[in-house]
Length: 511
Image (cartoon, rainbow, N blue to C red):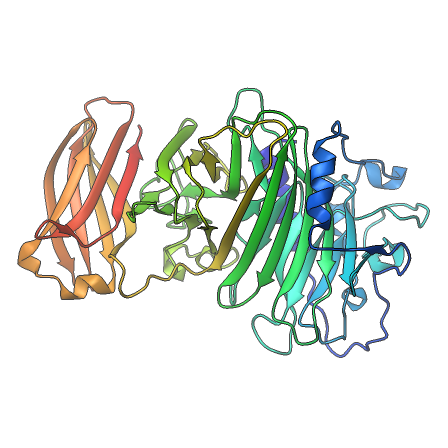
């Protein structure tokens, strides 16, 4: 399975399988837990397991399924629903409920899931009666098949209703939403060999431990064991849903082999077309994307905005840094008019920003832009790649915070680029029109403002800056003669008396 098949299936199935838990069920409803097989559980339990696992030869995941489940169609699989009245912690007022995904279709790998309570880990057993089967999928013995993944529900939008807030499903992919949002981009545990000619390796979360939350809890802890041919790893997620949903992540990676192409805190999203990239697009919608740019705050304190594109050929960009402060794939256009899609509601897709905790040393933020001709493909990948190669037998610990939610600028920050527009004026001449907004622009001297634009190739001309009375922001425009170049790297910012008042806009133009 390639990246696009996996993500396409994950998006479609997880969305189709969202079941809202009905209210008023009794606390005695059937549960998806099993009391047998308890084992002592400590905070280092999963880390120690990952370290031991990495010292052994890799064992592929268990994909054995009964005959009736081996070749499910998409429609058959999406008809299998976990019964919300059987949710873990249902009716216990613990602030969270857990539901589980059935194995089948693309999700054949067996995933073990445990509940942690009172210092012990108890396996959560698969039971056929915990699911409804709305299509003819055949019969099989009611044995413990394990699960494909799980999702967590919490009262995120109103206090009396448990909405779905996050999903762990497929390889090491997981997604989350904040208040009033819908699913969009995904995160992963680890990326290996992304973009390499040898093919990408997809590590898998092979087991999870769900820590039973206290009554009235507003956060939950999830442990995950990661495994692949090249590495094993442990993850501890502290999840706090809200106006911005926060994941505090503590990870430990144990390479089995030297890993020169590992990616930390990987993010995966979709960009089909936007105001800067509508070539050969015939669509009633102005834009279509889950994210419109890569945001970075580097170790030197520079704020950088890199608009995304859907290129004609694979594009790889690397931004060298030391101890990055944050990076993420961001959805800045937040109005319905920006998309005009009554079903997808791209304006409600979350941004996802990675905030490293502690020093991550030298490395680079790597961005992959993969050509796609359909919106169902996730074609954008970004992650942190350390300069130091992760050697076989070593241990690497990283702590970071994931912010899922709206991309809201602080009033004391620099102005931000909110739109990148591009027009072809004839021949090789292009017109770029950049919109900026922010509180910082309300106190500038219009006479002292200028746009600073540079390019490594081509010829820049007609740089113009002016207030935008319609938005309350500013507009920066310029022309560039591409002169038949195949790629041009550009950079721009707005300045007042030579002092930057905006973040840095960076862009790669290709024909």
